Length: 185
Ligand SMILES: C[C@@]1(CC(=O)O)c2cc3[nH]c(cc4nc(cc5[nH]c(cc(n2)[C@H]1CCC(=O)O)[C@@](C)(CC(=O)O)[C@@H]5CCC(=O)O)C(CC(=O)O)=C4CCC(=O)O)c(CCC(=O)O)c3CC(=O)O
Ligand SMILES: NC(=O)C1=CN([C@@H]2O[C@H](COP(=O)(O)OP(=O)(O)OC[C@H]3O[C@@H](n4cnc5c(N)ncnc54)[C@H](O)[C@@H]3O)[C@@H](O)[C@H]2O)C=CC1
Image (cartoon, rainbow, N blue to C red; front, side, top):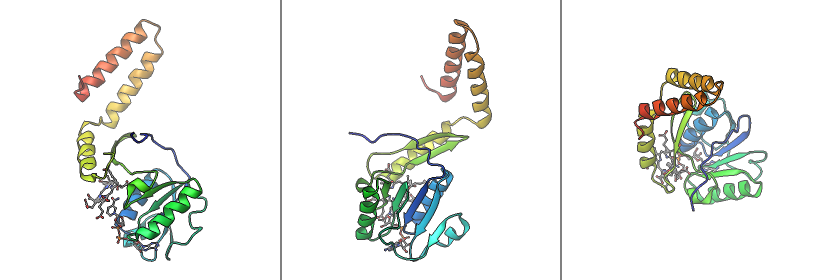
């Protein structure tokens, strides 16, 4: 069995992060980049949170804090608290990540390479973040520039307006150009 590789559009959805440490901060950045509205619940939060557009509830997690959250992250060092968060999230049908024990949650975070909307996300299917990061870094070296993406997109759109068999030929040429640029056989 493998995980479902998918990219979620959760713009505007509510996310709750329980815990305010280094891991919570990384998760907050990822969720904000994806347009979610983030609330952090933790008695103490990293100073960097004050510069982010997040709502901070400066207290320990309590049952009910996850109400209305489409996505939940449990990122405290206390396995019992994380388990309560995962249970509440699952009971209300939210996606949930347990930062200390990924197998308990329904969502794992990936290492990501990104350029102008092209995203390559790596999961190792286990807990080997250094491999995920190294793979994402290699992928980042292959990502086309925004200008190149613009040219290829325009080329494809122009090809789609052609009648057959010119359309087919133009798409084949573009496919070959892209594969050559990326060093794909
Ligand atoms: C299962 C998973 C969590 C999930 O997604 O549910 C997980 C688990 C664990 N990570 C640990 C440690 C660290 N992880 C990082 C960094 C990243 N970790 C990420 C993903 C994942 N980490 C998921 C699996 C990914 C996969 O393998 O496919 C990345 C890719 C994405 C992200 O977190 O945003 C992100 C790079 C972000 C970037 O580069 O931007 C650093 C910092 C660093 O390296 O700089 C450290 C500290 C150094 C170290 O200890 O290595 C520990 C030990 C904890 C302990 O000490 O107890 C566990 C738990 C365990 O292994 O039990
Ligand atoms: N997935 C990953 O990449 C990694 C996961 N981890 C795991 O994630 C957990 C958190 O790691 P860090 O962020 O480094 O920890 P940290 O020690 O920097 O921060 C812990 C945070 O949890 C908060 N907290 C403690 N009890 C709480 C409660 N009852 N309710 C709400 N908040 C509470 C603290 O106030 C603090 O903000 C660790 O247990 C570790 O096992 C650690 C490193 C990487």
